[in-house]
Length: 417
Ligand code: UTP
Image (cartoon, rainbow, N blue to C red):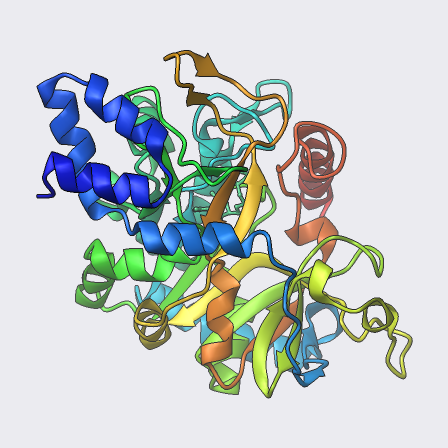
């Protein structure tokens, strides 16, 4: 492990004098813990990521084209039946697994605890986000007479609270031996001056490094090996916070099988040309999700011969992969993006600061950045009112209020049918 004097030299060379001061003040046990952490952090990488936040995003010369998709509502009866049959077979055979990405910080929602432990005020009694996911999986289990293995990705920060919560609620009735919880990796948080934040336990404050970490964490945690042992052939990966997420959509799965692709995704059409969502396209011949900020205005408004937005298929974290695709993605290096977020920290006087405005950069890789490593993707357009009700913000768009409305409307419609 790194010696104290070497750590001090390293920290000084990266202008982290506040950590040097902290190190000198700590008792022996805490000092060793911090040295151990310093030893593992790649300061060069973090400072490069921080420096990148000051640079303009480089838009390279890329060939962007619209991507093909099928609209679920417009499939012929025969097409749908064929897809459903193919998909159903895989699930019935026990060859299907689901991953929930629950390692996010949920800073915009501001809920005290992992996002999955947030209770959405539906039907008077309320339902936790994890409970809503279990409902969806149990419905599929019943329908296809199977038990889908459920992998939950947590962060080092929220793992303990997540496990305790699920234990306390007895996994909402999900057979525990089929719930596998694994943890993703982290990166330090950096303030606007390039200083690493300090956490309450007097260490360098780190946070999960984005949902793009799912692939490598599946492999590093042994979950991928576990899937292979169980004979899994297809893996669904979704977020924790969309209360209309369909994790076992046989039409999507069957379509992927029929099209003989390694990855597939459910989209919903953009609410308007300027909605702040990432959209699917082909870049240099490969599937890609292009962020709203990177899509030129003219392209955002472009329509095809049917009057539909050419770049209108939003990515809603509803993705499907063959097990080989997961393996492949787990070995690729994904780029990091930076997000400016609110993070509490301990200041030089040892006081906790809880910011009311974003104060620090979090570096994250994105799950969709792996798409470009594949030749093709099958996209199925779903319906916003059936497939997409995210809980992101405390108020306004994509908030508990909008998600509750969409959730209740959806289930009222199901009861009527
Ligand atoms: P978001 O990017 O919306 O982030 O995550 P978030 O943490 O939920 O919320 P904010 O931005 O801090 O307000 C989309 C999905 O990816 C997961 C989240 O848990 C959510 O299911 N995620 C995100 C991870 O699993 N790990 C991460 O590092 C980031």
